[in-house]
Image 1 (cartoon, helix red, strand yellow):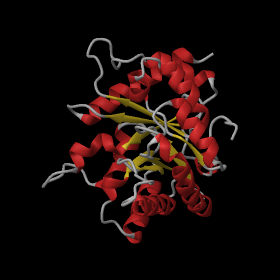
Image 2 (image 1 turned 135 degrees about the vertical axis):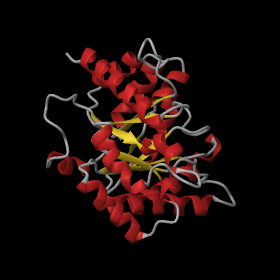
Image 3 (image 1 turned 90 degrees about the vertical axis):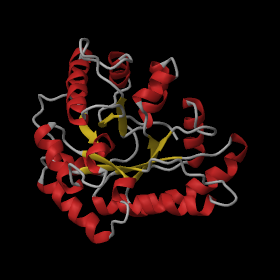
Image 4 (image 1 turned 30 degrees about the vertical axis):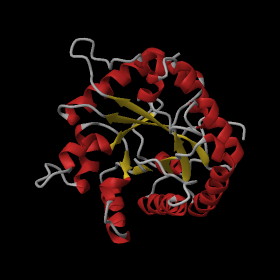
Length: 287
């Protein structure tokens, strides 16, 4: 499959064009919140925040235009609960654009492979009920199991095509660990709705974030702007944010960028600081 920027099919774009995106003076990439950033506020015996209140907080307090939800925050939710959350997000003008499965799926494992494939299909169906255009998973498989992994993903892609949701792959040890392995695997699976979900911290960890993003961003419809901490004086994350954003511009990426805080401290304040740093980097990278 030849990558076509900005990535795989994006049925959510027409929906966004109907009024969810703010005026055109905003940066071209749609900035959304990875709700896993708020996990400390959503967990515990007495949560400080309810999941149904996340869309309003995202839009009104953080000034972001959509959500990416991790599946673990939806544990136990049925179709009715998913539909209510979707309606709440739409009322808040903060649609749920992507669903993400945090744990790698062992699709070729002799014991768990069938269950992993079924899990991927359920994630896609839940994404469709939430109104998402994309669902992200990681495939945990050794290189020697490539043929079995391709066959498993082709089965999953039948569900992706059926519900009209893009399947985005995050790197995992083994078959999809490096950008070249990932793109080779995607080409073997084939299909219009398969793509990638690159991650800034993963990119920085390679030592060559430019190469990482240049290889994976053309296949993406969501890029995760992950970070652990914003420097109090620099007001930037520890990695080279400008380089990451610059590469996205070079490859013509203009889809969603999900801000994801993975460190300690106040997640709302941290996401706000990353949003400001990201806006500065986007403005500096603009032609």
